[in-house]
Length: 180
Image (tube, rainbow, N blue to C red; front, side):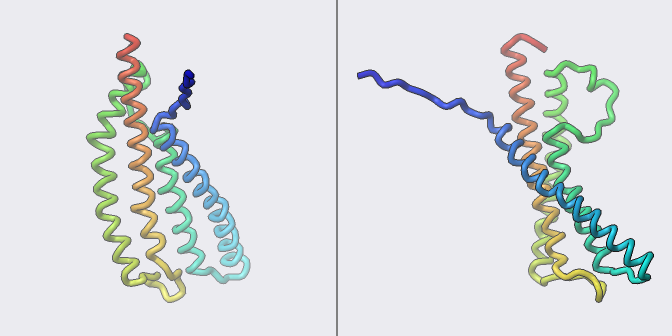
């Protein structure tokens, strides 16, 4: 009796990471809708009723910071980050992958790791003392927004690892195919 061996196609790890990061980032992108609503309410309260709320102002920067910080991982995965270059766009796919790899390994990842390490203690201390706004009318739970820093940078680190894996695949496939 002969066994038929079937194997499921494997999905590269970087694609799995990228899909997860995109999903998480798109979920956090909805924060922008809430941000617009809070800004509209705050403007109406301040301009029409002469009654601005400090808690709404703080909520605005909390929402904005959260959307931006989780958006960086999305930008990294989709290669939408800002580049200042003169030659990169003229490089072959393999050379771009090499430049990305070097930049990520020697510039971006060390920075992100330092931010994660330092922001963890920053957020932990805020949790420990149940930090809230220094303004009497401000928001409680300041630790919540401070926790966004290490969490979003961990997501950014994962997106950089996905980019590294993608770059390595480009380098090795390019080498195998004899293409540049």
